[in-house]
Amino acid sequence: MGISNQQLFKRAQEVIPGGVNSPVRSFRSVGGSPYFVARAEGAYVWDVEGRRYLDYVQSWGASILGHAHPKVIEAIRAAAGDGTSYGAPTEREVLLAEAICARVEGCENVRLVSSGTEAGMSAVRVARGFTGRDRILIFEGCYHGHSDGLLAAGGSGVATLGLPASAGVPPGAVAETVVVPYNVVPEIGDDVAAVIVEPIAANMGLVAPERGFLEGLRAACDAAGALLIFDEVITGFRVGLGGCAAVFGVRPDLWCFGKVIGGGLPLAAFGGRRDVMEALAPLGPVYQAGTLSGNPLATAAGLAVLDLLDDSSFTELAHRAASLAEGLAAVLADADFAVQVPVQGPLLSVFFSDAPVRNYADASAAAATGTYAKLFAALLDQNVAFAPSPYEVLFPSLAHTDDEIARTVDVVAAAARAIRA
Image (cartoon, rainbow, N blue to C red; front, side, top):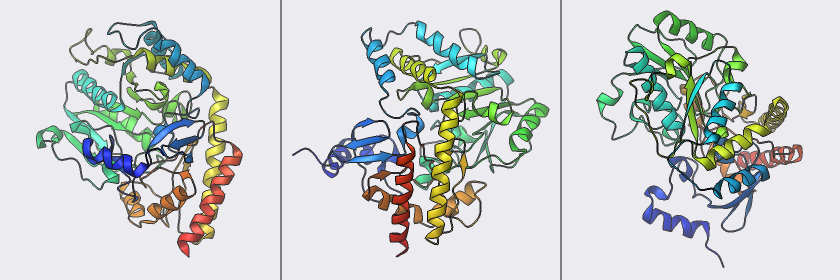
């Protein structure tokens, strides 16, 4: 008989802090212990015990086509045959950079990195170097990676574990970081280098920008001479080929991308206006580097994914997300839960709240009810895997069929009735 999830978790805790390599995987906020994935295909993952789950995590949004898409796997295999890393430029780095710039209007230069954290910290460094200013404005509940200066009042795992920030971050590291409420345009002084924002907040659950918010940020940054950074690690190439700038008609100076552009492998990017990006070494004085940046396997996967996405892909994703959101809202309300199921294009989340969620305070109040954790556990018992945190979004992929969406709604209906009973 093979190893069980519980046995593997016990072993993991002996050699990995908390037994996981990213805190939100620990199930700390939903109870129980995590399942260990052995393989994945399409809309499903299988754990080490052979149990199959209908998966709405999808590698936290990286697997937009579904897991292990044949053309992506084929591209990775072909690339691996030529070597896994060179420490030298490759053609696919150029092709992927061209593909990103061609799809995102106003993004003239990009630099490839290996994680969203790298993209966020590097974009901020470029902004500071370009403007000659130090102060950064961030929004409560948004998450821009785990670099010291961007962790204050963050969403995602920071929110999930109830941490105000992080131990080990000295006061000086956040002395020039100002945290303000999401969906409120702040005053921006002439000491501010940049405002970094998730144009659709997706790390405190799904919180859409209210009308005028992004436009107000653009105008305020222009007036102050500050740069506007869109963190689209989640939304880039998921809400549409042009990302949030195309959806909302607001163009930032810099972008952060990740997840989808790596095809499930470690790859991210930051990019933007040519004059700003040319502050980077070797052209300018802002230093940034990475041994594995532009990794040949990751660029092969990313190119394969982008080649398979067109406008019809995003129309279909939005249809599936809307169907799921509508179904969840209906069956949870039928079970007499006060619930909000916001949907924005292909993204959705579940808040147990009697009013729409506009910011991190609202999201925290919804999470504090504890109802999401009960729903998560009930669904997992029925082999449906939602995100193990009330602060994350759900990611239906192109591999999720209408039948699977309908089955999910049925399972949620039964779970809701059981919780209520």
